[in-house]
Image (cartoon, rainbow, N blue to C red; front, top):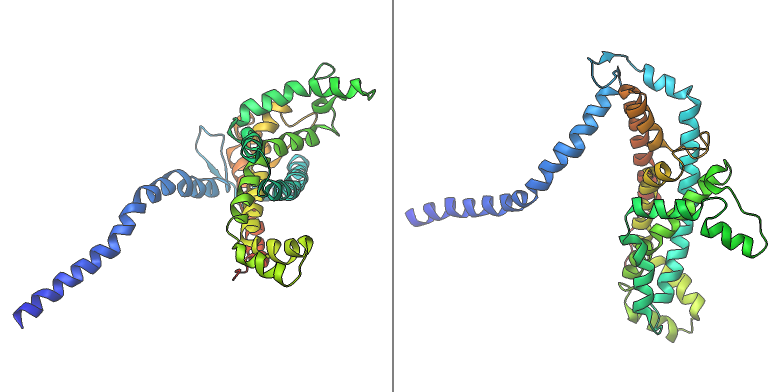
Length: 301
């Protein structure tokens, strides 16, 4: 009896250690998340109800910052431009990267080389990429205008044209991100069991039917992942906008993060910028929740 009574506490201690050890492994990351992500989020949420220039004492301002945002034409323009940028980048990226992944997943000669070339822009920093594309868009001696004039087409102002500034940034973002999403879809394609395709071929399915009935449904988790991170990334775009157009000409390429930066670090309206940041967070949270709600069904095969 004494042996059994001593064995029970030892077993309980082993169980407790087994339960605690996994949490010890994630503790450093959890602490970093609390200090550098969750803490600043709470601080920003609190500051959104104040009037603060970043140096003095914050003054309580109630919900006035949020009410002023509804009447702020610049903020509304930035919201519209962010949505346009998101639609212009995410959907084409998903379509083009899926097509490229299908090509690069086939027995193509030299596909390792092509995979490396397509992924190359991903390893280039956003700053370097944006500066290079800014030089390429320069009027009239940029490489893109030189290409147009060689074919008898008129040179364009690109980043100086209110109509073309945002599309120029969209085009640069497509070039930068295409390799990343292609790799994601390549990984998704390689998780689909070959036996499923063989069963479809035995049933007489052609290539289009295999793609429509097998590839697309079984790529749903991959597509959902790419869609969610694509939307989040597009709503947080800042570097190419700042370096290529600085939100101009006028406010034609002003996006939400650029508007937050302008209010916080150029106009020193930290409370107002915090209210913008809260709205941006709520928009990303709502869109991500809707994506998981409508596209997050599990796939079984």
